[in-house]
Length: 177
Length: 207
Image 1 (tube, each protein chain N blue to C red):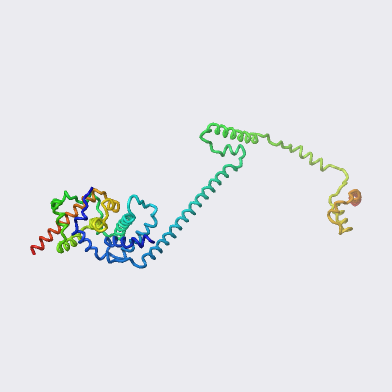
Image 2 (image 1 turned 60 degrees about the vertical axis):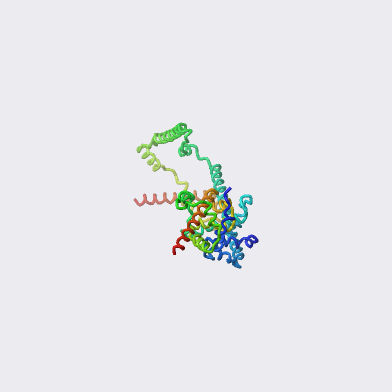
């Protein structure tokens, strides 16, 4: 129960970012802690931290919850099905431009970015969330989501460029108005 | 080593914080730990029940298998041997000894058939000729010897004996003095003969 007191808030917050309904999020969090209790002997401290392991369980429980509820919003595509950066010709922006763009915090851009983030597919949003908000390494995210590290790295680059491009478009649209 | 974008992408971090601002305010329900404890208890009970059922099922299976093996072994080793001829006929031939078995069965069948033939071929019981039988009957009729024994006299004597001593049991009746009885019967026979002779004489006289 000490583990629950320590990590319950983090787990529920993580789950709530993928399941908006509070009651559902708590139920899934209960499933996570139950699975943690039942399979604690399988935890390998060398492979990951306890929190990362909890997030891995939580991620899979959320996937199960969405499948169980037959909600198709959360679609987990295989790595081959997701378009790569090279395939998207419209995202022809240099890394320096993206770095500069995402580094300068301005109020307008932040609002545009929040809007763009909320329209991302949930699988992509989860990657952004784990990377920027939970400060997980690519290795940990790979462990949590069962995706390969090269895929996650390239996907992260692609998402940064995509977000940058979206904001640019929104800014151009706003300037015209 | 992939580039770490987190230090650079300040705008993105701010936007994410803003997006999930509501989640940060979310607090764990006060009964969360209690509900979890209850669920763990329920799951443990279920698991224990499942485990017990599995163990009981396993034990029953083992017991049934042992009982079956014992039954088969007992029925195999305690089977009484049947008579030779019957067992030879009824026993199915094994693949190892079909020829030998067939020969034995044929021998037994042949022996049985021979016995039947032997019984059939017995000579008929000789019947006495009719003429001989008639002469025998005539002989019996022509016997002109005095009657020394009358069967009805036995019954009369027995009745008399019982009248004289009614309390005597049947067993004591067996212990009758047969010499006396014989003498009495002879006497009675003599009287009857005399009566017959007297009757015949009377008849002759009348004629």
